[in-house]
Image 1: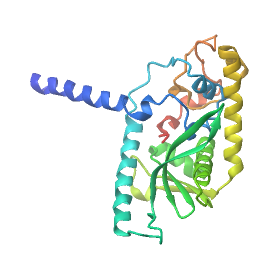
Image 2: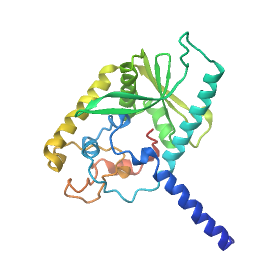
Image 3: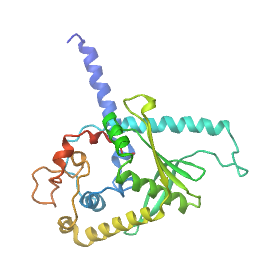
Image 4: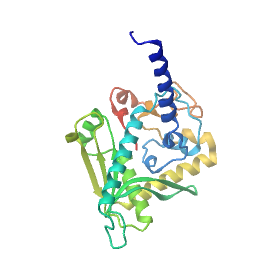
Length: 266
């Protein structure tokens, strides 16, 4: 290694600053569930989240890829903010064409508001940015579907805008490549379905009430389903006690050989 001691010391200094910054992002510190988590297909994972159960998967890597996605979101927000400035007073009421990063409340779970920042609203369409890696993006294109969690998230944010008094006709998930060329982008959209959002809230409410009533004794009653288990905060390989942590779903063996963990859940 040709680097001088000074350079190596500075690398350690920079690494520490970068890592502390990423780990102290609001998303990394968030403890309550948001709209993006209501569609998690694993009831147990959602139950751990709703219960505020201590995390067990302490060996997770620094969330570098999600941080990249977060910064793409910031760049898009800046770009569209400038576009709003170039088209002032889009409506007679002076409302911006691009409604950016607005906080919406989508409903309640066990008496608590579920809120999140919606990426973009344009004239009845609720948009959500995703920044997946190459293999994940190819899989979405092959399936021509963004997956259950993202689909539910889209309709749930649609409900949030509707509750704010905005008309909602469609929901869209725009997948922008993290490590491919622009032409590889993929768009999924669907007519807004209020019932999909209400069903997700009802499911989460039932799980929340169960864990509130039974505590950790509720965990064995919740169904497990492969849900990017290796990155799950409550994964505990070999666990025989769900009150301590989850050993993972049996179907995860197939998942582990895939690259689905490139997923960037924004």
